[in-house]
Length: 442
Length: 78
Image (cartoon, rainbow over the protein chains, first blue to last red):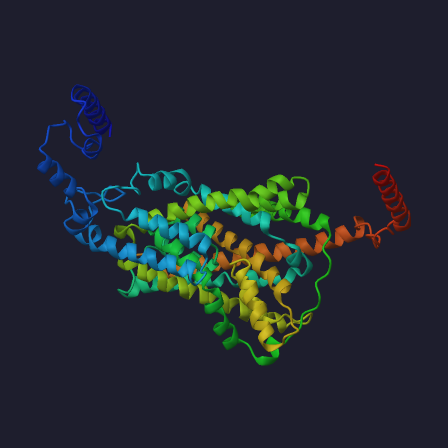
C-alpha cells in the first residue's frame, strides 16, 4: 500500500518534471498512463496502441490476468469478461423493473446503477479506493446506513392501529416463522443434500429475508455473511416489491370465503400520551429482554419518539424526508457495489433467491394461520387476511390485505386493521434479528 | 461428532420464535395496561366540538362597503 503511494508520488513528480520540460506533451494521453512508473516518450502509434489496450472493449474481451476483484481476490476469466456483461444486462433489467413495472424504484434504481458501476472493468469503482467502495466502507460494513433508514421508518410509522388493537401484534410475531422455518430448511438442505452449501451463519442471514424488512436484512447480512450481502439485499427488496403478486394466492388458499368477509370492530381512538409512551416502552422491554436487538429497535423508536413528541417537527421531518432520502441513495449504491460479477454470479445467488421466496411465503402463511387460531378463542374476531400483513413490508403488505378483503366485500376496509400486525411485524423481525445476533455473538 | 446442523436450526427456531412471542405478548400486556392507566388517570381533555367561530360577516361587509365608498369618492374627486 505504502509502496504504491510512493510509486505514485514518484511517478507524479517525474511527470511534473517531464511536462514542465516538454510543455508540448499532450496532457490527456499522459493522464491515462498513470500506471507507468516513468513517462517515456512514445510515438503516436504506440500511444494509440496503449490507449486502445486501456479501453473497455479490450478489457472485456481479453481481461488482464493480474486484475484482482474489489476484495483483492483472484477472479476467473468468466467473471472478468462475460460475467460483467451479464451483470450489466441484469442491471438494465432492474432499471426496467423499477421504471416500467414500478418495483421499489427508490431502491432498485440506486442498487441497479451501483451494480452497473461496480461491473466496469479497469475503473475499479467498487474497489477500496473507488467511490462505491468508499461508500460501502463508510456506512454498510459498519451497519450505519440501515440503522439510519430505520430511524426514518420509525418517524414515518404510526403505532395507533396497534395500540388500539394490541392482540394483532401476535400476527406480526407469527409471521417471523418465515425466518426460522427457512433457516431450518436451508441448513437441512445444506447438510443432507448437495443443493446448497450454506453455513449456519449464511443460512441465518438468508432466512432474515422472510422478515420482509430491507434494512434488517442488510443489517444482519453485513454482520453474519457480508459475502452474500448483494444477493440478500436484492432478493429482499425484489420480494418486497412483489408482495402484491406473492401474497394474495397464499392468502386465498388458506382462508374460506366466510373468513375473508369477517368485519372487524372499529378501532378506538388512541390518545397522544399512549403514542408518546409506546416507543419508550418497547425500547425498555428490548433493553431488559434482548439488548442485541436494541440498535435496530432503538433507532426505530428514536424516530418514532421524535415524531410523537410533537415538539421537534423539524427533526422528524428531516428523518422522514431529507435524511432517509440521502441515506437511501448511499445504501442503494453501496449494496450495488456488491453486485460485481465475481460476487453475484455464483451458484449461491440462485439458492438465496429460492430460499428468500420460501421464507416470504412461509411468513405470509404463518400470519394467516395465526389469525385463524386466534379466531378459535372467544373475543372479537380477526379477519385472517390481515395476518399476511404480519411480515413487515410496511405499508405494502397492509395494502394487499385491504385489497384482497375489498375483492370479497367492497365495504370491508381492512387497511387500518392490517397496519397493526404490519408495524408489529417490524418489531418482530427486529427481535428475531436480535436473537440471531445474540446466538452468534456468544 | 459433527454437529447436527438441522437440530441446531430447530433450536434456533425454538429460541427465536419463543423470544419473539414472549416479547410481543409482554408488549400486548403493557399496551393494555398503558391504555388502562392513560384512560383512568390521564384522560385526554374531551376536545370541545370546535365549531368554527361565526365570522363577523356583517361588520366586515360594512367595512368593505365603507372602503369601497371611500375609494369611489376619492376617485371621483380626482
